[in-house]
Amino acid sequence: MTETANSPVRLAVVDSPDQPTPSAGLAELYRGFEKELLVPLWTEIGDLMPAHPRSKAVPHLWRWESLVALADRAGHLVPVGRGGERRAIALANPALGGRPFATPTLWAAIQYLMPGEDAPEHRHTQHAFRFVVEGEGVWTVVGRDPVPMRRGDFLPQAGWNWHAHHNAADRPMAWIDGLDIPFQYVTETQFFEFGREQISEAERTTPERSRSERLWGHPGLRPVWSPGAQPGTPLLAYRWADTDRALADQLELEAEGHAGTVEPGHAAVRYTNPTTGGDVLPTIRVEMHRIRSGAETAPSRETGSSVYQVFDGSGRVTVGDVSWSVTRGDLFVVPSWAPFSAKSEASASDSDSAALDLFRFTDSPIFEALHLNRAHVEGLNA
Image (cartoon, rainbow, N blue to C red; front, side, top):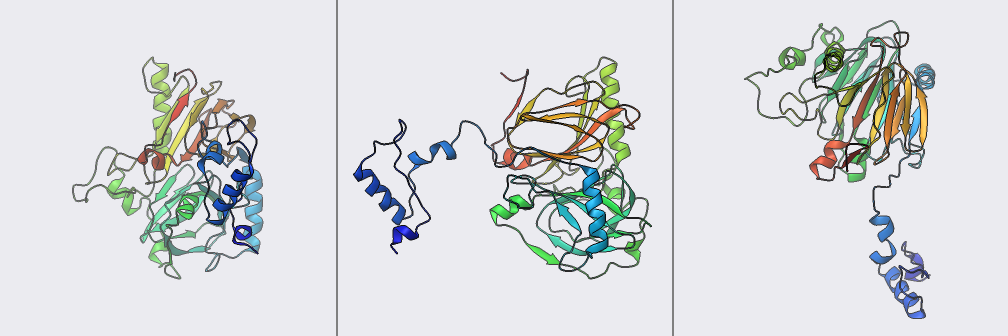
């Protein structure tokens, strides 16, 4: 078998206005390129340099009801421990070849812990968070600091921190995990280590506030003791009561005729690192959006991808050419540069705030650091 036959490079002579004129000499040139593992730009430019991003991911929706039912079955069949480590069930975007990736850069999973179970300690370079859409009774232990997890709480954890989980309740609990696993996978930068086999008895009981909250959980204040800027937030829990109040205040200010919302009927907050004022994690941005009943957001596009979870309420979301009716817990993906909009159909019967609350995480910090971020909002951008 010839070297050309073994080459993974395959070049076809194409009779096209944007390609060289077909000839025997051109075919021979292409065989030479294949042998030496070379690819000329003129045969690939449309794919490598398109007019706008063309994501490999596609819009997709996962129903929370189905996820919880399957996670509960796994809870009775699949142990938590070394080897499997976590009973985490990842969302697999249908266009990404069966890989456990929600988008090319973001991982999202439902994690499920049975009563009395411990998820053993480990650490990894992947930046992570947990978000609780329902339930309580589990706490995460990060750097031996026990942190209670309750509905609406956002619990970030920068890479390379030891962490474990424990369920002290008499019922199972589910939450979502978000990580930058796909990004670190494709850039070949990931590390992982096992930690202790068991957490201590002191870590099985948790105070109302973790040590991190006692030190960092005071709005607008930071301890003078602390070192300088940290790449990941040292605050391990952002409580729902604070998030809820901030969103409600924005909509109340709007109703009084003052500025404060992103657009009419659309309040939004971003979780921030108290040592920098920037994003909570170096590779992940996290926000909560509240859309007043009857309001609809303007279609918007961004470079980079997003994963949303409906925290409360109901509504209709449109991603690209597809639309879904969504309710509490449902998760969906917005690929890079796909237009997204949401209309709130929430009421007091399906939402504590009588609005549509959307939890969102994105890979925006990566693209901003590389100066590759771009956004377009219909009606605002030229």
